[in-house]
Amino acid sequence: MRSVFFEQCGAPIEVLRFREDAPKPTPARGQVLVRMLASPINPSDLLYIEGRYGLKPQLPATPGFEGVGIVEASGGGILGWLRQGKRVAIINDRHGNWQEYTLTSARQVIPVPPEIPDDQAATFFVNPATALAMIRHVLRPPPGAWLLQSAAGSALGKMILQLSRLDGFRTINWVRRPEQVDELRRLGATEVLCVPPEELPEQVHRLTGGAGVPFAIDPVGGAVGSAVVRSLGTGGRALLYGLLSGEPISVDPRFLLRGSKRVEGFWLADWVKQQRIPKLVRLFRQIRKLLQHKTFQTEIAGTYPLDRIHDAVRHATTMGRNGKILLRIDSSSADRGSI
Ligand SMILES: NC(=O)c1ccc[n+]([C@@H]2O[C@H](COP(=O)([O-])OP(=O)(O)OC[C@H]3O[C@@H](n4cnc5c(N)ncnc54)[C@H](OP(=O)(O)O)[C@@H]3O)[C@@H](O)[C@H]2O)c1
Image (tube, rainbow, N blue to C red; front, side, top):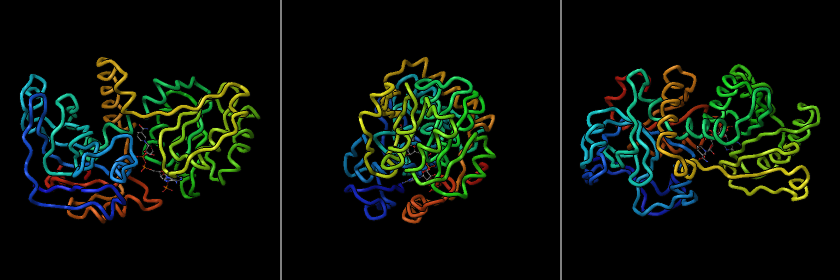
């Protein structure tokens, strides 16, 4: 079968390889064999290949944490049997989705209804679940409260804007490119700032009448993450959930002490492990509904077959690409709508 893999961690463009003769895997009890249709290139996939992610690859490894596919066989167990033949969103933290066939636990495939096209089903879990978990389960900003977010033009940032419309909190959005300002306003952003990071806290204090924000989320780190934290008001709480800049944040402890401000990390994989099954089932239902109603939509900037993995990665790491890059693994998936 066709497969993308890497034998050592490093820059994705240098270490990723494509092969057509990988052995088709066999599912063990509790696992399902999934014929992959499509899988996105997410920032977490790139960090994993670089060896900078929270989960370390067992080399040689195939990347791809999420995607959509069809369950072809079950290795045994009632859940796997129930999933056979179904089109599913697949979460895979061991075997990787950037290949024709993959294995995962039967508990990590979620049937998706036909109205959700392959490109949206392929991005079903990571960003929607993170947006919902951070906003509705961890921070819970009440209607009218301010939430500051950086990298607001990201796929996830746009989902936060949709949640702000539904839940009534107000957003201050920081972006690095002025082209994104109008688009985010159209999507419902209350305020959009495209200023150097060192000016952000002052601008945020101006917009909030000198109070600073009670809630903030940052996936960038470095100067941007530091400025986001310095924009907090008394009792404010910031979640750091990414490392797009690759740089550490720097904050004067005195700033955090005054007004008991909190800075916390958020990682979906950890959060999911701490939740009970019924809560996760409710979360999946919520995501399905938000996708069916097109409230959550992931824009697709380009699709590539597996054998063009280097072009795909180059595109995925281009500044201002405006949408996700998707690997189209089964070419017949092009017939099912948006891909
Ligand atoms: N902690 C978790 O569990 C979790 C779960 C899901 C996602 N995440 C994180 O959430 C973030 C967004 O994910 P996504 O899939 O929505 O991303 P995405 O759609 O690929 O977008 C990335 C965005 O980040 C901006 N960006 C990239 N590098 C930057 C930098 N150095 N400084 C400022 N902005 C930068 C890009 O701006 P341009 O448009 O200008 O290029 C783009 O708007 C990622 O960091 C990802 O790892 C974390």
